[in-house]
Image 1 (cartoon, rainbow over the protein chains, first blue to last red):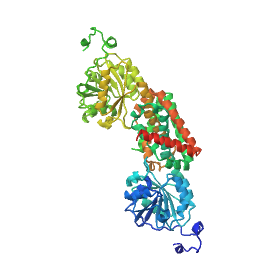
Image 2 (tube, chains in turn red, purple):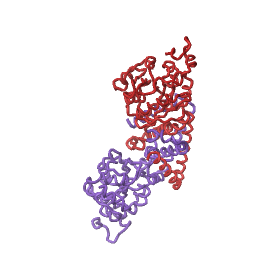
Image 3 (cartoon, rainbow over the protein chains, first blue to last red):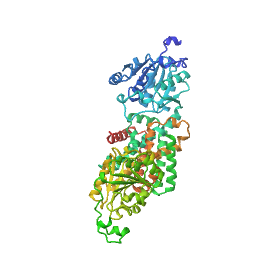
Image 4 (tube, each protein chain N blue to C red):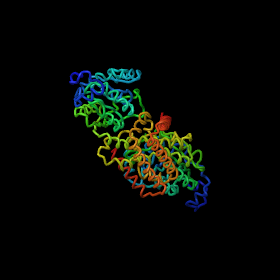
Amino acid sequence: MSQNLGLAPGVTGPSRHAQNATGKQIRVESLPQATVAIIGLGLMGGSLAGALRGKCKTVLGIARRKEAVQKALELALIDRGTSSLKEGVREADVVVLAIPVRAIINQLPVIAALLPDGCLLMDLGSTKANIVEVMANLPPNIQVLGAHPMCGKEKSGIEVAEPALYQGRTFILSPLARTSEKALALGQQLARAVGASPLVIEAARQDYLTAAVSHLPYMLACALVKTCDATVSNDPLIWKIVAGGFRDTSRVAGSDVTMMLDILLTNRGEIVNAMTECAAHLQQLAQLVAESDEEKLDRVLTKIRETRREMFP
Amino acid sequence: MSQNLGLAPGVTGPSRHAQNATGKQIRVESLPQATVAIIGLGLMGGSLAGALRGKCKTVLGIARRKEAVQKALELALIDRGTSSLKEGVREADVVVLAIPVRAIINQLPVIAALLPDGCLLMDLGSTKANIVEVMANLPPNIQVLGAHPMCGKEKSGIEVAEPALYQGRTFILSPLARTSEKALALGQQLARAVGASPLVIEAARQDYLTAAVSHLPYMLACALVKTCDATVSNDPLIWKIVAGGFRDTSRVAGSDVTMMLDILLTNRGEIVNAMTECAAHLQQLAQLVAESDEEKLDRVLTKIRETRREMFP
């Protein structure tokens, strides 16, 4: 295919791409015509695959573990599957990386080198700044688009995958300066095809916002579980009196640790800021309780309640 | 009825009760024979009433606001209703106070003076130490029993009452030294009748435990909402990217403020301790993220995840 792009014979590897002047092209413009390869068949990848089946030409599942590929076939989440990265992406029009953030960062250059010209390379990583930084430097013969669907479960793995996972959720897309309009449009088609609402947000801004509304809740849930573990958990009655408030507030503490470590370590600055801010608010609230400052507590808690109700009417 | 108890004629008011040597007696031993008066027809009282209908002789609803009584009748949550406290409790075998904690503390002596001998006086307040302290000093002609059903909603009022609210929940009972076995047994019957599991816990111990598993989650949810309000809420995109993690972690921040203020101010010591401990854990976690201490983060977060999974398998 490199012949079609007018490349000098013998030019291979990254330098070949660097000389490619066709970075604005894309293999297919319409999702129904596209062969979509999904790399990583866990909760996110498996669910995306299942949701895309029938909405594009072929859904191809790629996972290192043969058992995951087998399971995805059994669950009818993919049309075809393979454990060979090279073979899987060779003919792909769209490739979606559904693996942990730091695996995405490491694998992007490897995978990019295997892609056909004009292929759209996307990811589903929860943090975007570090990922688009790597994407920016990938060979220009491919299209790149950061993505972050706002959904998940506290359980992970292909066994809990379900095509409805993306339904009604926001699907963040973080295009780069090099991302063509057609590539972004194809990404938006993909988001809509799985029932989600695409929302374009620049990578740094998405990392700032998700630190507060997604990563901070995880850390709070962890701090809550740790506090109970360190204090009341010795009391044999404690688990009998746990009510819905604790269950809901602590739910995300059950999230996959590998995934969360990647998020924490690739969005450190924003997350530490959000945690520090939140710890200060917690201590201010504790101070008001300690002082029995009922009037101020009433005002503050009422405002918080109203804010929560505006968020979720 | 005082004649039956062998009281000297003309002895009335608290002194009458103080001389009453029949504190161990109870009007009825079996719930199906009991007239149960529920004071306060909000979420908790209305739901309890509805769940008790048909399980006892009569469910009598008492609320200051006539509209609440009317609504409870319309919703078929009570057999009869009144806005007159005196009239409502006069013939009651069991009286349940389903009002905020500090209203309970204030109303206990007033209501106790209106009750027939051997009546069982219970409450549903979320903190118990202050309440049982007042209960301990009530006239001895009645039975007293602290209670705290572990359920609720972030919405309040009779409109959201539902008889299934108590189903499958733990119903804490905090008997006093003066509470007779038969009175405790009647309280247990009541808890089971609404589908809950009675659990006997001494008041101070229940306050220590609930501070960690119930009141702390509320304060964390509030701190989370406040943090987002103080930082990212100016961004118009923020509410489009809020996912399930934030919704669940912040849910209890929508709790009724009057109820929560009462809880916070009647369990101050335990709550401030739990918040201080939790803020320290949050800062330790932030420190690990700031230092990119992946090995330790992995160990700590994995342990937390396992603990959460043991709690909610």
